[in-house]
Structure formats: structure tokens, C-alpha cells
Image (cartoon, rainbow, N blue to C red; front, top):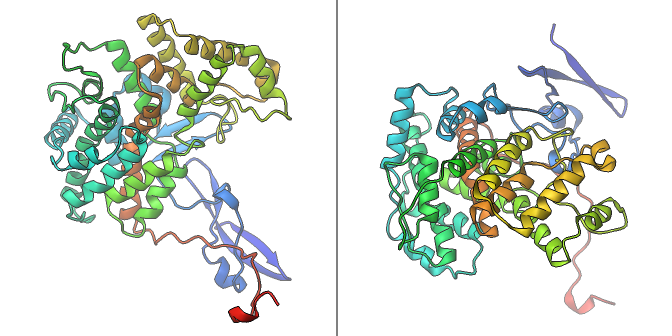
Amino acid sequence: MSKKATLEVNGKKVEFPVVTGTEKEVAIDIKTLRSATGGIITLDSGFKNTGACESAITFLDGEKGILRYRGYSIEELAEKAHFLEVVYLLIFGDLPTQEQLDKFDSDIKENCIVDDDVKKILDAFPRSAHPMGVLSSLTSALTAFYPSSVDITSEEDMYNSIVHILGKFPVLVAWTMRKKQGLPLDYGDEELGYVENVMKMMFHLPNKKYVQNQVLVEALDKLLILHAEHEQNCSTSTVRIVGSSRAGLFASLASGISALWGPLHGGANQAVLEMLEAIKADGGDTKKYMAKAKDKNDPFRLMGFGHRVYKNFDPRAKIIKVAADEVLEDLGIEDPVLDIAKGLEQEALKDPYFVERKLYPNVDFYSGVIYRALGLPVEMFTVMFALGRLPGWIAQWKEMRLNKEPIGRPRQLYTGKTYREFVKIKKRGE
């Protein structure tokens, strides 16, 4: 017997189906609410209690600190898989065989060349432009250079579109940074792996031989895996709702980049470093700023601690903390900003105020530390987040289109003026 939920409004009882997911999550299916109640809607600002879709991609339990991609724990994937394997897993549903992975890698490399006219668009941006704005614009511009629409009923067409963007996006990411730094644009080396090539395209200097640092490559690989997917967050929901209008893949991804840009979402890792720089400029007293963070009357906000979804330790932060320590040890960097970061981390992990409230350092805190150590400009931090999140956006877009989800159209509760008669301009103000 199927379960039902009963809602009573104005003396009338209405029943709705109760749906259970594979991880025993429970939802009330209210798609008939308006028709069954004569126009009543739910009000849920920020959609904190609203499921906008059914998805088989990511499972997240914030209370228990669980994150799984397609059933695989984030801990195992970060330890045992490489980023490109995780990309394949998210988009196609299963970990690839060696043959599938080799073909996937080869097909992505075949699609890494960007139309040369895209450089003209890049050239039009001033060097002062934020890389996220540049990246969003270039991604959207790909639609003009590759205008054919995706036939979602064709596996071949869908696959070709996916390797197409996976090949070109890292190039656009690297170009946004090199534009910012006034460096010549680089296509990297197809002999290198996906992550290795990303690093070469970004950091290769024209007058020096490029040498890979495996510790840094592995740290970036882990970071990209940890950022690859995170259920129905702001940018992912944006990609799905834009795609629900049947907008193309490139346009939908560009909308996700713009959503990610915000300081409450992907821009949080940039905000962490800006906070650390401000603390340094004020003398570097971490105890002072820990006290300010605990003072309810102080506007200071400690960035990179706690998480909206995770009510315990962010499982991604546990993983990337180890990588951050390895990077700092390998590079032997003496940087007062990173010293401040380590000081804040140690104090927060011991301070009863933070421990009781479970305000632990999150993935944004440690990713900012790693990107700083790599020598990335702070404006590039969110761009790297976008590179990691790309496969998640693609997987969500693909799932939404194949499920033939209806166009997203939230409702509202109107709180404005009631009907008013039009007043001619001569009589207004009388």
C-alpha cells in the first residue's frame, strides 16, 4: 500500500503521494497541489525544503557528512581514481574500463582546438576584467562557433558534444589566466594527461622549460574531483533550469559559471584569501580575528568555516587538508598569508566555540590555500572551481534533458499593491 501525506486547508483534506529515494530519503509529491486546492502554493524561500527534480547522480547527507558520486564515496574516489575517471563516471553513470577511458581521453584531446576567432573575443577584454566574466562570455560564445544543436536522442551526438566542451573548456580556463597575466596563449601538450595539461597551459613560461611537479598535479587532481559535483546547489540548479527551456549545452554551462561566481557559492575560496590578506594588513593577529568572529555585534565574518549543507565536518575538507599539507611541505613556501591560514585552522579546531558549533574549515578554505601555494592569482580561484564542476553540470544537464523535465517555472506569493486605477499625469500628486 502506497504511503500518503494529508494536508488540511480551510477544512478540506487533500492527499499527496509520499515518494522514497534509494537512500531512504522521503519526499511529498505536491505537483497536483494547485489544482487540488484551488490555487494554493508552497512558499519556500531559497528552495531549502523543495526537491526540484529526481536525480541519480549525487547523494549528499549533510548531517552525517556523506558525499557519493553515482554510489561511490568521495573518499574512495579521491584516493583511488583520477579526475578523468570521475568525469566519465558522473556523465555516463559508471566508472570506465581502460578501453573506454583511453577512447574518452583521446576524443577529448581531438576536440581541444578552439576556433582562432575566439582569441579576438578574448583580446577585446581589458586585462582588468575578472576571469569568471571572461570565462562565462567565452563559453557562451562557443555557441556561435559551433552552432549545431544536440540531438539528445542520439548517443553519438550527445557524446560528441560532451567531449567537445571537455576538450575546449580547459583551454578557455588557461587562456583567461594568461590574458590576465599578459602571457602568450598556450595549447599545452597532447602527450600529457588531462590535469597535467591544464597545469602546463596555465604555468608554462615562454622562456623556460616546463617541469611538472607531481605533488602539485595530484593535489589539483584531488581538488577537481572534490569540486566535480555537489547535488542541487545554486549553479547546478541554474544549469538545469536554463537547460529546461531547451537552451543549448554551452549557454546552460555559461549560466552555471555566472551563478558560481557569487561569493556565497564558488567565489567563497576567493573570499577566504581576501580575508587572509585583510588580516595580514591589520597585523596578522589571528586571535583578534577569532574573537571578532565570535562577537555577534561584530560584522566580521570568518570565511571558509562551516557549511550550509554539512552540519558536521565537510568530508571534502578532510581529504583536501592532507593535500594542502603535502603541497606546503613540498614547496617549502614562506608566506605570511598561508601562515595566518594555518594559525586560524589550528585555533578553530581547538576553540570550544567553533568545535561545539561544528564550524570546521571547509573545502573552500583549503582549496584557497592550495591555489595560493600554486601561484594562482586570487581571481582565478573560482575559475578553477568551474573547471572541476564542469562534469557535474554536464551530467545534470544531460539527465534533465533525457528525463524530458518540464521548463522550470517557480511560483510566487504576491505581496504588492492590489488593483489601482490609472491616474492621468496631470492629476498625480493631487
